[in-house]
Image 1 (cartoon, rainbow, N blue to C red):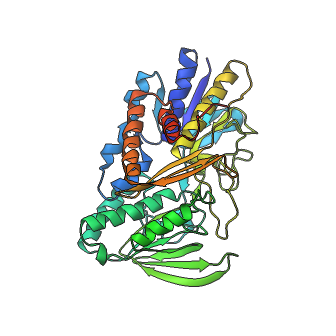
Image 2 (cartoon, one colour):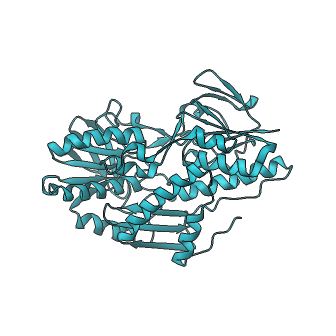
Length: 425
């Protein structure tokens, strides 16, 4: 009996555990290790931060649902990985051996790369984690009592821009509902070379549509921007030209701010030669497998993906939920093949499918594949996107409780849109 250990209890890790157990059956042991005993649905964090959701609405205790599928669960953080010995040490002192390891931890949030950034010892908030969103919601309630300028955006080297745009639009919607929007100047700060770049080199007319949406809501923006430092109530930003030369300094006052940080790999993996790149992300081949440690796979945000294109201010490529699920099923099938004495052959689809909520409407993007040139580029807007995002939240939470991870909604969505029938490679 082989032991397959998955580290990380988020969208990728839970999907991977269910997929792997379905394929492995009772012949092999599947173990999920996580630094939290709960799953939380990350895409809903912007709603939590304005009190449209309570944290408990998007959290699920993992152990009861994993145990029903005969998946071992260890609620402890990874402290050290010793890949040459196929073992790891956890924060509670346990040692865990593995035959195959899947790293699905997500990133380290690199607030420390900018002085004053972040909710822990800094002056900005985050929606990257449900705990951060909870604290952002507390600050939001205080802000509503004394409204003023807001700064929202993403830091240099960020690779996840969608939630920043979503949050700007959601905040605008909430302020309009409260009839205090006229008291709140909003500035959007981003390292993207233009609005709607999204780390993807744009998707269709995303530039025009996103700029139009920001203008309609009277949200100002600064692109090609680096955040130099943050102090209480003030953000210092440098704007650059197309060649990356500094052109203008901005001192942006704020009563409330939410900024997405750059990501790195998690600390226990940072110096393992051959496993990670200089930023700590796991290097993989087209089968999700590390070239040096071939019994180690990686999925999700922890994976090293090169930028779609070079930009004046460095940006990374996003990993969407649909893409992560595709990575999970491909990794599970490849490990199952190896357990049967075969070679890995499955590849993730690497399609970007995004539902960007805008509070009372939304924009949907499809890029197939994510990295150009693309077979399909599709973008639409409307109130239906907001409702589709709500439906996807309910659907995915149901999947976690039910223990099924078949990307049914992705298939239905693409078929409904008349774009493409997905296929496993």
